[in-house]
Image 1: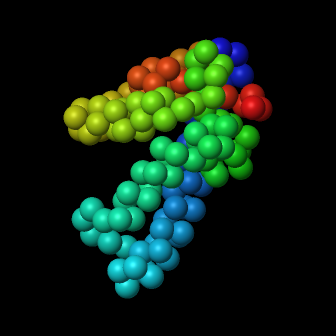
Image 2: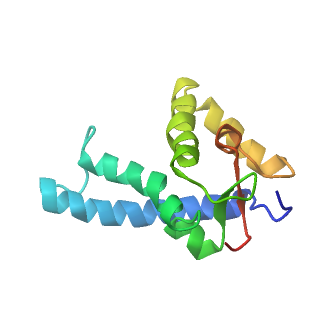
Length: 136
């Protein structure tokens, strides 16, 4: 692992960019499919949202659109590219941990990214990843 890890603010910015892009894009997809911009309850749109975070980093060298725009990406701790198992742990398993801790785990993760020297969060530890400025 290099010392070029991405800190709290740039990671938050990338997450906000992804959120804005997905809200607008999936909102219009929802409008086309369900005739509503926002859906209540679980829908096909939620599956597309999950697939974005699960699959895009696998096929795009650890980038999402927000991360790419800010020049950061997800990498495994052994410097290898992320695969399905890694992203499944990072997104799905850690998401369950955050839900089971009623969001407390997410708050702890935010502090970890801001305080730890390597800027790793709970989902980074679960998946064996970190977020870096290093190019592929």
